[in-house]
Image (cartoon, rainbow, N blue to C red; front, side, top):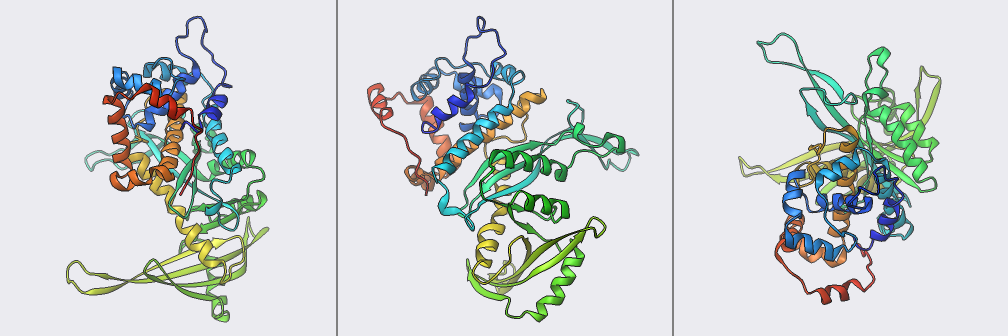
Length: 439
């Protein structure tokens, strides 16, 4: 975090401060850095942050590690600030850090066909029985048998974009909140993931105009306008093709693969036998057959052996996968595009699991003010990015192997709470330049 702090502070310092400077005790940047540290140390709530981070030794060590923290603010101060500022600037600061690392070629060894793999997927953040903000989406759920009317649930849904590298490194990049007002209220249609994807794609293209990107999408996205949008943005893509999606494409694939027996590649990967088959140049017509797009389809059948837990005998297991590619497939690129790119789309789902169940409290809103809730979300994603970079840094790998990710974070948090370091030694350490070296 120290290596990225100058850029981060410079970017956060550009956020207009709506407060009266004569009555403000803490600088805006100080409050936001405190908010990021709240999630880096995985505080479960505002109360826990106030209780833990204001302890005398914890506070002293924070100020020693981050001299910018002249004082440690109350978390309610952070909440009030987030409800008044343009919280989108926090995400802009996050994106600026990613852009700087891309410019410094920190991730170049993980590229796919010279492209940065960006996984995009949606997930539910909060659900309540009552409407706490007019931006919330709503749905009807089946009630108990004795109740005649279905109940209405109000929820927050977010479309997330993350860099998903084949070494397991998943770095949060951008968030798009679904909003009731973005839907078609006249037709009683709410905002949905496909509509939000278009907004997110527009922002992603604006932030990274010249960056070569490969988007990794799930089975919701084999859709003509979505694929056309990706081609318009000059993005490569690998999209999951489900059995019931694009029937005409499946029919073309089934007929043509028999005529192309040479379009086959067999290999072993991770103890599994893989058999790839592909068909290039399949025309898909959409919008009442007025438009067409050229697609390339690849399927993968896997076989592996496991010991049955009941019988104790060895059994053969199989699984089938299929993807749509924007680029023709061949023996040289089918492994890279399928195993190193498309399969690692699941990394973003693993990231959701980490943020929901491993200390980041994704499903806790921290505030019932819509804007402040989004601000806390951006701070959480920014903190998760710092922790991922730490997890995959050369200098920290030993501690991660010994203690695990959550154990290492807990160890640091407990150390800061009780350990009083030598001030002179710390000043000597901080006089050296900081540099991120990833595995």
